[in-house]
Image (cartoon, rainbow, N blue to C red):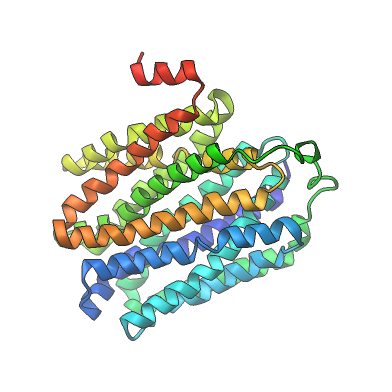
Length: 386
């Protein structure tokens, strides 16, 4: 494992995802400024997911065939600059335009960075990818807190400050670009798999699992701040709630990656997703200090499978690492983003609280579907209990 390029990729992932996840904290203020409905908020959140996702398979396909290291640092700078402008938008259509353009930068960054980590990890790909995913999850946790602090101090124009870490990180990636050169023979290491057919059944099921998990995940981080805001909770406390959920999610991702090397990718994916709805329901139902405990454990279980699904896809497509990364991090996430838009309409029709309860059930459905990955005997034991 080459630690330096992995460390750079992890840090850059943190910066990119922190910038992207400022949006859930900014949206309640833009909702008041532009007099938006929950449906319009859902559309904005969906566009953020879709625009940053649907192009990822295409960028991954390109990165499998040509040297495209420059995409990483350009994507970081692009994301930082455009997300910094989100607090200055003069209208709802302008907000949607900025969100879509920001998504292009993140879509360019993720597949190339993920493939670079896979190549730098050697035989410890599960561990390396768990660090990369943890960096992104940590960025997602830091984004709401950073946004809440900047907005409390400077108002909505405070989002401009996010340009600084984005440009600095892009400059660092460019300065040490040679660290991301693939080691000799790395791309041909899986030549023996050249004639292996693509397992479309497992790959399609995996994308469905990720889509349901993403729908629940993206919807919850979008609508939980709105639910707390509706209940009179301060913007900063709502930001800290997301931080606890996502920070321990990042820690859960590290644990899940480590466990998957020991007990198998399939079991970690299924068990963690099946545990999430119960823990999240407890977090919503129980007030006081215990709520923070259940938020932390719910975040850990939801994201325990994050890096595991990426590595699983790369193992299914060993000759197409960029495409595998683009599919798992992109296409399925985009489909989940469409679900966030649907959840916005459900919130308008059924109420915000009902929509949130629907969202927390989706990862559990994904866990049931993931049971099909288990070997027959293990699947029976998982469904029957100890």
